[in-house]
Image (tube, rainbow, N blue to C red; front, top):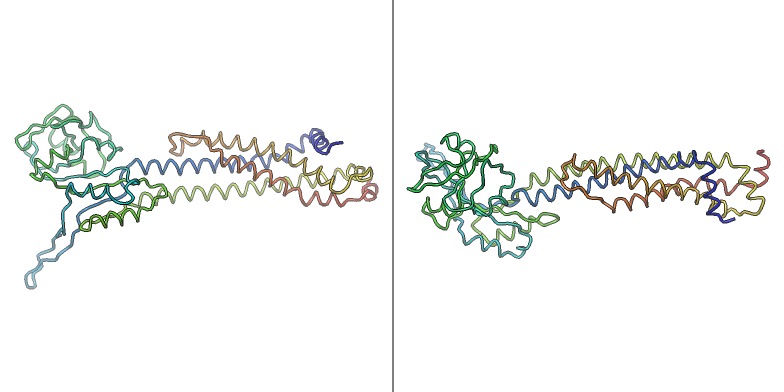
Length: 383
């Protein structure tokens, strides 16, 4: 009789034992695939958010702190800028060697100017770049799109008692308030946001830039090298990478991955132990059967093959079903961990199936060797 068919029939004759043996592998592979898939999706989600939300490189004029005093009298200190940023610097930034890794280069210009009788800070930014530069802003109303339009920070809106549809007068011009920012907890709450050209006009500085925010596509990108290249292009500027958020989020995902691997390793070890115990018990119960097979001419290799085929079928079915359940569980749980678009991850599933089969076969090795070494006379003696 064919060994594979005999192994398949043996499984149907001992259904409960086969189910018990496969349960450990099923749980282990399901847990491993679910955690691995979820971790991979979380890493991708974090990276997408880092690429979309906010800059990771800040460019400001290089300054030096000087102490002032007269004799023994200290007059405090002041900051002296070595140079100022201009619109020409944006072209230099976009011309670096790794320019293809730059998602956006957004200039900002800050100036103090009158606003309906109050001296306030105005923030100038290209109108078409506001959504890309500050995607987390929530606006009551609409963002600015044309000249003569402004956004008000929440504090400014309260101070001026203005809202969408109101007007602000500055420099002899009247600006339409298109929207009000929801409180952000940042300095924008006390600013008026307008097109960068409008703010430059109010300040009388038509080429000035206070700082640049650069967003680099950061998945495995050498941010330090990009910073160095920008520093070489702008020797009078201070270029710094904003890495705190990046590192903290990556550290959180790494900790979750380590926890998932630890839990998976424990569950897989339990599954392997269940396979070992089940197959060993099966060998003990089937001493007579194995002895008869040896008496009718089955060689040790055939006995080994029979037990390996039995375990192999169970491992394959348990691993495939566990991988399927793991992928489904990861997709259902992904939104709870901040993943906007959950997708099926097939790489962890394929790896899980391979691990499950190998685990089942390895757990079979000691009892299979013991069964193959069993002689017909020992089987008859045990009757």
